[in-house]
Image (tube, rainbow, N blue to C red; front, side, top):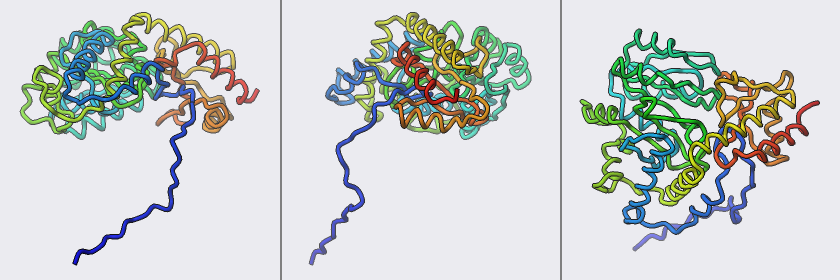
Length: 382
């Protein structure tokens, strides 16, 4: 006699059709999505091995090479957020016992330290106060002291708004026979990047900042030197999903099934890169710089100061010092609740000390600055 299994009911939820607020996203990410990218995401999906989708993957590769200014053949997008691409660089380049030197000048340098340690690296660090950057002499001294296999730096430190100078770093790494890995999560699309000219071997980014997409498809690139180290590993890559040996068979000529890609996220990424290519990457960089200088001038007009020296500030993200006696979290909440404007708070050592204001991708426009300054003028004490 068969037993009837009672169906569980859900009396706690009475879901209505989705209705989310329309915010102006001026925090550290995500940024607002370009309307053309939203339209591209509405395109009906095809299969992840459909010839038209495989062709789209090739277009994404070539456009990423353009915005990164690299000829690296192993240039792909990881199906995941920027943190997945970040971990992919570590998983594929680090073997147990490798000495990995990591520059820590903010929160995301510390994240690299944590990740590298989990893959068995002998992690060494060089540090700077949050908001400062490393000089070439700093890096040379640290390399000569630790003799690492890999040097990892955050080009655009999202927690501080500081831009790490890269001139000469690649030459230094090649002189000592080490790989150079950089984080371009908050710089790709909005800050000048010349991976090949700089001698960068591994880099990663995300889709939801300078590329003006939703999160979910994250750029990753590896040079021939990095690929040689990968091919000569004595152990398998410890992360199956992020193993570039396997991903490369999907992105390469073999087209071997690896995973079901988030089709519509790749539509978004492809459209984003098309828009940047249409604008011209140099024009895109200049637009971000022009608009952030307008932001700095406008904020200073309100009596606010920036945390990072002007020479090293990012054009995509600005850390604004919270004035004494001001509850920074309360101000940010008022902007969100009353004006639908999002800005970010500080992370780690800068928690409660700064706001983080992003002008990235589609949001890098004068009207974004005007909107923010107007609402700040209304909520800040005189």
